[in-house]
Length: 263
Length: 263
Image (cartoon, rainbow over all chains, first blue to last red; front, top):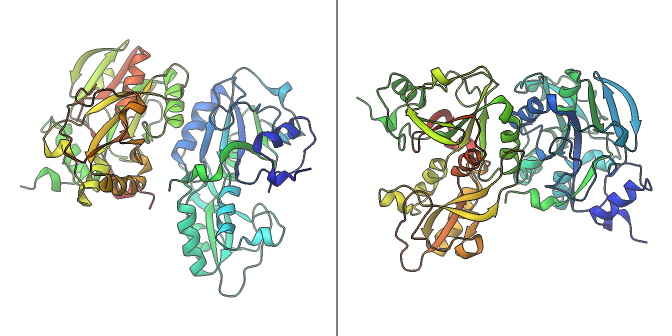
């Protein structure tokens, strides 16, 4: 039997669709880009698309489906967005109501699915360059912080940018900046290095989401715009119905991480 | 008196608003990014925004206004999109009806303005690197060709990609690829080098838009996705009302060409 990391994206999606895989997708289908999911009804979709267009660093769009269409044609044309993620969360009026493995019963003809780039892609590139990714070393969820940096508002969507943090030595931070610059479709270069106070973060040991990680002697915190931002902002606006992936239970696309690099 | 190339973007826009400048904007406010304009009513705007999101090389969005708002807040917050371009074109049901210097009388509360990156930005970078830009040398409009490369459809918007062509030596084409890779927000790297037949172009001496330029001994044609694409595609769908800049009469933004580079 081949391991999940060596399978293709479509093989993994088939196992997910059969509900033989229902757990987190980290490390699966190595080399294929994974994506965050946000599903909204058409009447919110223009505002959300505009929000993502205005805030490309936290909200890097990989694909947006036609209203009612559940195939993400650009990144996995045969996939079914209603069944091919291992776990979903349903929110009504901004309140989390249920976790489910299939959203077919919730799907309506005016729904639009947004697939957003995920930091797994650039972490693969960081690791390939021998840079530390502390939360992976420590088997934790990445630490994430709300900042005082406002996103650019669009219609009903408004809120602060959320960032993820990876500690590293200053020379590693420079290399990490070069590497992630290649990937504007998955958050791109860091937004801040070394001065959390300047973006409104007062205590690195108390992240707003995820878990704190060890910052070693000589290391500086490096902050990237985080894909939690669009979900957090969308929830604040309390849409009647919103569906997302459950944390860590991502959509695995047919495009390769390297296809998302600009050079 | 200072020359137009040395003025700031806002100084030029003021002269345009007073109708003291009504001609093409090439070379004005040197260093500031210029943009293509497409104005559509809200009921077409979601489809058009989706079309641009799906086709970022021909349709690189720099800014999209809130419905009814005529200030492009991201790239020139004090500008008025209705008056600050030297010349506009009005299209009704896809038919060109009028050229005008002010669109205030056409403006409606549900209109959305799309500002799209313009190749002037990357041509400045090519020239700064000593690369040839033949149509500038020959005082012509850049040659543009319809290709057999389909854009990705979005709602009512569908059609082929239009490309612009600049001939250069192979080693210059490599350097030009590196330079324009830095500017994904203004068409990015070329889509083709040296083989026009592969993208459905049969005769370089007969461009579909603009004018043919000299291809010298040893030079190859280098093709970039062109900002004429979204206008051409939008017109094909015959929207009830569409307003664009007149060719060459661009919007001059407050952001600098270099702000549009990713590295």
